[in-house]
Length: 350
Image (cartoon, rainbow, N blue to C red):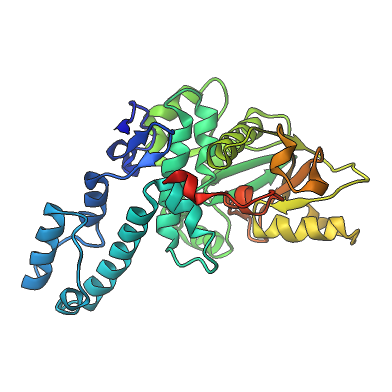
């Protein structure tokens, strides 16, 4: 059984309102959700669209699940249109086979090589995250949720770790660069000119987020002990509870002091390599260590979901920026780089 979602839309462009929520809490795919892809920029008709493309587009709008033959694709005159239809229809078929957004997301990472384009993975991540937020309850949680599907630019100043949406910062820097030679020089050097001028979310201005959520223009403080880092821990907890169906607790750490350190995972490529070296006792250069944003301790309430040797033991996690100051959090690492007794079960989501 499925029912319409409650009015918990935070990022209007996501299309969450086109989905249904099943009795088990997972997101069901609808005809209108698929139509959203069919009417998107990749498949939008243009004056040069051929008759075959127009006919196919009309047929799919009428029945978004209609089977399309290889011959129908080859009849499209525009090679870009052929490729776009192949990609989007393949993704549509994955959604159909999985039955839910969550099922499709999990299957993406359980079938060996990941073949689903990043734009679809990010979209599924956004939808699931928005669903977990249960509407505008806490702007800090919503802003922390952005890290799951949007890359961040990181600025460290006097011990404060401030992130800004990478695309937003880049756009603002490009605008400033067009205003003079100095701006162009700084932009070529990789310095975000106006990212530091974005509003940093604090308690006093956080409610403004709801009217600006679609702009992704709030900077976020991930310094230790600040509300932003706590919110990130909470949204990671919700993510794991929803997709692993197991209760967890995540806390930020400044260092790992554990003689029985048994397992760790990075939430990005940089922190994965860093934690590996720390575990092995390697000496870490100061500039590389400075790229570490935070460490975390993950505990499962029910130890039986973990491999036997991990019962009662924490999993340590890390988050770091790369050399260019970019942060790319991989939420799938919260599901697949954990020592679970069994892999996340996609069949539970059908």
